[in-house]
Amino acid sequence: METNTPKRRDNKKSLRVKVISLGNAEVGKSCIIKRYCEKRFVPKYLATIGIDYGVTKVQVRDREIKVNIFDMAGHPFFYEVRNEFYKDSQGVLLVYDVGLRESFDALDSWLGEMKQEMGSQANMDSIVFIVCANKVDLTKRRVVDEGEGRLWAESRGFHYFETSAQSGEGINEMFQSFFSSITDMCENGGKRPVTEVSAGFTKEQADTIRRIRNSKDSWDMLGVKPGATREEVNKAYRKLAVLLHPDKCVAPGSEDAFKAVVNARTSLLKNIK
Ligand code: GTP
Ligand code: MG
Image 1 (spheres, rainbow, N blue to C red):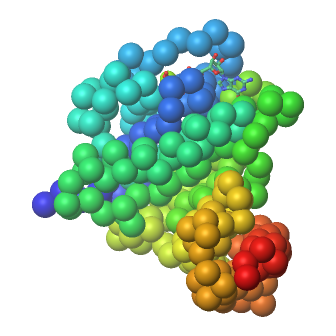
Image 2: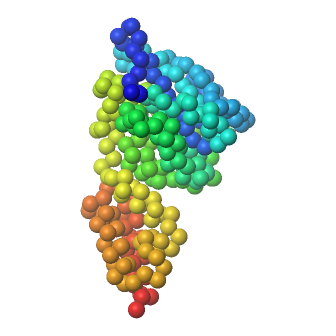
Image 3: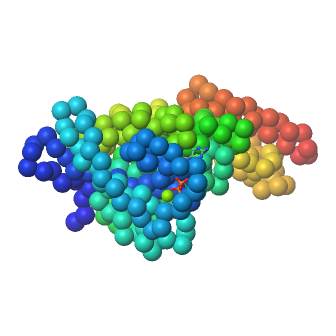
């Protein structure tokens, strides 16, 4: 049976772990790793061909951690190469570019690809996930805000960091948190401590807020077909109101989503006889 339990060397205090980077092409995966390991930034885009592999040693408390980093190519062309490398990872860096919405929307399919390649033995609870909202230095072209990214990450029990490989913002903090969580997990018998990222809201709430934000009109927002009846609108409204009511839901953006749903219902009911 496949497990994610890391290899322990003879020295009791040293650990060997495997981490991988995932995300669309050109979002900055290689640059984030380079910024941390080599303290430099390369502005020219050099696409990763298949996989890049590197090793780094870090100290977490009284342990030396040897980290094997597998930096994946994001281009779909390299799927066949990537799929060999998902297994036995203790940590995943999920990267998107805050200036490209499609790279954020693609995070779900990256998780999907990983689950599929790990097969039925996949145990996602034994992996530490960190979401990097990268290129935050390019403030003018930003289209995915912090609330949206954080919501996606934290509703899944993942960590969220805003990073810039260009300026170095957030990079060391992100890696420190990454390695220390992986160490905690290994010391906790290979289970990600559940209290560590306690979002206080459900994935259903987070996904609903995201759906509401991206909805194209009031019908879409309430999740009913155009031309739905009064009863259908009210039924859909009540379901959303229970899920998102600010007294019950602490997810970021829930208040705005709730207001939007109230307004959508009011405007639809005005036009339904
Ligand atoms: P693949 O290997 O093709 O999957 O791409 P990647 O995700 O590894 O992207 P890479 O790190 O090669 O960076 C892509 C481009 O974005 C390069 O031109 C980088 O210089 C640039 N880049 C990466 N991170 C940042 C950042 O934080 N800010 C800015 N402004 N540019 C960045
Ligand atoms: Mg790369």
